[in-house]
Amino acid sequence: MSKVTLIGARLAEPGQEFVYEGESSLCEGCPYRAQCLNLTEGVKYRVKEPRENAQTLECAVHDEGVRAVEVETAPVRANVLSQHAYGGSKVKLPGPCPHTECPSHEFCVPDGAEFDEEYRIDGVVGDPPHDFCYLDRDLTLVEFARSDE
Image 1 (tube, rainbow, N blue to C red):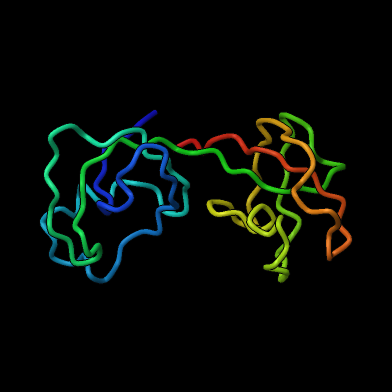
Image 2 (image 1 turned 90 degrees about the vertical axis):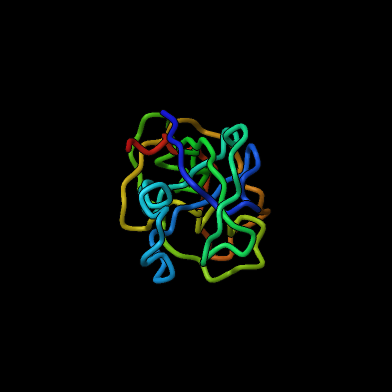
């Protein structure tokens, strides 16, 4: 299901993904608060399309202002332990990884997912992009089901 919200003008492009981080202290007193702060904190979203003829509004957080867009929750791709990588199963992320140079790091520490939460696997993507895991984990790349808001 999609929602209309205000986001930074630089992000207001179809397909752009972001994780909603919640309210900034700079939002206090803004007349557009209700339109901006209507998403769920920590959830990953994808811009479906900018609203036609929408104005760019001044914003204390975004240097180029904000624009109205339609967004939908976006799926999160993540590496999980291979023994649990089955469509429909519920899993937790295996834990943090300090190896930021690894090509799989973005999937081991994915935006829009928390280590202490359980997620349902919507589908198995396949092998992760790394040749070997520095933490000696047997991992499979999966896509979590979209967040129910």
